[in-house]
Amino acid sequence: MSRTKRKIQHIQHALSIGQSRMNGLDDVTFVHQCLPNLSLADINLDSKIGELVTGSPIFINAMTGGGGEETLKINEQLARAAAECNIPLAVGSQMSAIKNPEEASSYEIVRKANPNGLIFANLGSEATVEQAERAVDMIKANALQIHLNVVQELVMPEGDRDFTGALNRIGAVVNSLNIPVIVKEVGFGMNKEAASQLLSVGVSAIDTGGFGGTNFAEIENKRREKYLTYFNEWGISTASSVAEIASIAPPNSIIGSGGIQNAYDAAKAIALGASGVGMAGYFLKILLKNGYDMLLQEISLLHADIKMIMTALGTKNIEELQNAPLVISGKTHHWLTERGVQ
Ligand code: FNR
Image 1 (cartoon, protein in one colour):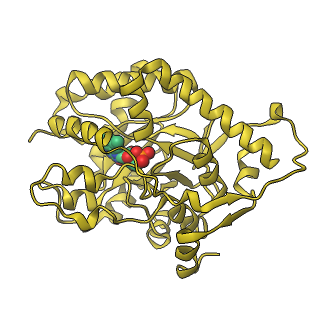
Image 2 (cartoon, protein in one colour):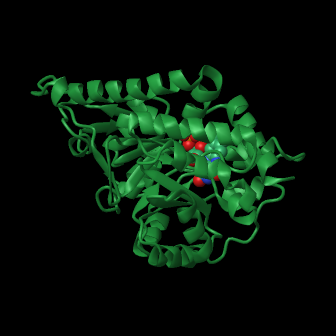
Image 3 (cartoon, protein in one colour):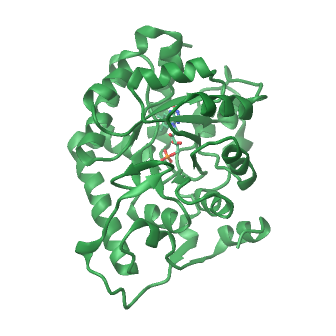
């Protein structure tokens, strides 16, 4: 099956399966502040992802790529929305365009539609230094995302089976590029030990890609005859991933993602330690079911709602929100206790 066809199937299955609500963020409760001593007008959403300065913690996470009119149109609309709302955007994996240069137009359109915004290139951890340089150059990217997706590959009938050497290759890419490298999962989460290894080779930010939203085991299971059902519930939730990694990572090096569906989820991910919040499946659903204008409305509503939540908490900027007091209950509390995270 061609990569393009596979990517169209991913979009169709992502929409039909939808996002679960198992991201663990429902276990997180803010401690209400009845004396916030600030005004809504004073709230500032500027943030940092690694060395990158952003006007908002929210960004559109990696989705589509490959050839074909449909993906080109989706990418163009996502890029225009990101420009209009001044939020970063990550493109989907560019490996297909590196292997088939005629597909590059569906990525290049992103830079054309969004000439001045922050755009992240995207490749898997099999990428060589040369491939990483080409992916960055293709869209004049401001950062490179490298995705880790072992479980997705295992469930994919035609997927990779050899996962050796990824950390070394990532380190080599970090050393050769002069832009930040972000390493992300795609919905199975990350533990603090892996994050620590990635940070030790110079990765600027870790995107948790936690369990509980879009589920690539379920998506790939739909594409095979004999289901590997045990992987459908596999992964570390977004809440647990962010909290684990926050216990070892430097400031501004965590992106909370995986099942983020509203401003409340985003604010909780930030309060657990993230400085960026990636949203993929939720934005894709709005764009494809409700259209471009609704996507714009939704992003501006997200910003307005985060400001309301920050006002109620008395936190005037993202750094203060990161330190807002929380109570963690249920499965997430249990997980963090077992994992030795306070
Ligand atoms: C993705 N995702 C993804 N990630 C990546 O690094 N490279 C890619 O090419 C893709 N492709 C892709 C296609 C589609 C249709 C979806 C919905 C998602 C994964 C995405 O960036 C994110 O990590 C997960 O979807 C989990 O976040 P959400 O969707 O729950 O917000």
